[in-house]
Image 1 (cartoon, rainbow, N blue to C red):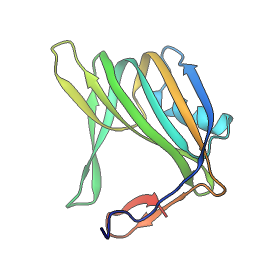
Image 2: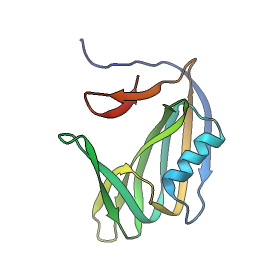
Image 3: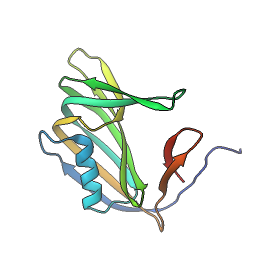
Image 4: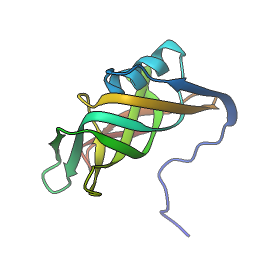
Length: 147
């Protein structure tokens, strides 16, 4: 089959790290700080816990821009997933999150700054590669994607 993917990467399993986040911290800032501090250049992230409030983005494909959804309430993190790669030569976190509110409604999207942690646990699995992928601007989608 042709045209299934643009980039294929094969590496080795590296460090497997776990963190408990500080109550009241910004979730995305914490994830970004962790990967910078521990020099994680490529890998996967998953996280769970609860937030005091959430802030997520939704990408309007036809307009090639994000809209922001402000979720000003306490919620459970049902699932948080993401990855780490390089952007402008530095570790960069790209994450999505799914929340559950007290009425059983689910909310989610692209994790943005402004999501405040009530309690959180993070797992990172590093993937070792000779040269981690770099995010570059893709004119088709107007996003920064792996080269």
